[in-house]
Each structure stands twice: as C-alpha cells, then as structure tokens.
Length: 126
Picture 1: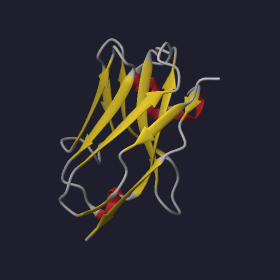
Picture 2: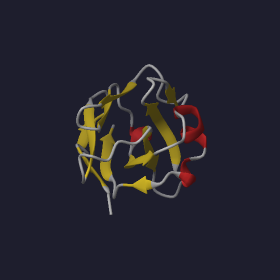
Picture 3: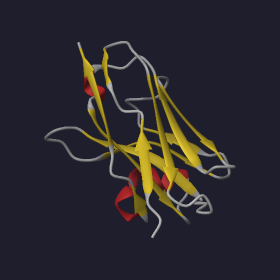
C-alpha cells in the first residue's frame, strides 16, 4: 500500500526558514491533490496548505505570505517552504494526498483524505 514520507522537520529560531518535503513510497502514485497539515501539542489538527494538480492552492490565514506550497509533478513530491517562522508554527507537520479532492476541499475536510504520512516535527524557539 502506498504511503507518504515526510522530511525536513527541524528545530529553528524564530524568524528562520525550513523546507519540508513529502514523497510517495511508489513513484507511480499520482494524487490529484496533496497538502500539509499540522498538529500542535494539545491542539486539534489543522490545514496549512494544499495544492491540486490544476495548480489551485489554498492556505490557512495564519501562514499566508510566509509559507509556499509546491509540487514536483514528475516525482509527485510535495514541498512546503516556510519562512518567518514563529513559535506558533511549532507542530508535527503531516503530508496527505487524495485522488479526487480539490485544494480548497482538502484544506477544510482533511480527515477524509486518503493517504497520510507519519509526520515531521518542526520546533520554533523564541
């Protein structure tokens, strides 16, 4: 069964940057939509950014202007460039994918996404 593998999580100072990556275990898996989601300690999981194969994107208000989602369609690899990080960005970041949902649908209905990764931890210190 296909699964997703995230990487790039790290500990950084506030104001710093990180780039997360997510790749499917099978390169032939080509989802319509992929996205990033996060869960901070003691909080509910939330959508961060999503991107579908038509190029549509959706971002949480809290990350607009700081985070950029992109995808290498040839490798079906997803990226999240995170700039101007703050301690409020500290969370486990998960990658997820779906064969049908659009970017906008996925951001708010992520529990229905088909495949998830195990997560990569981002810690931002002040």
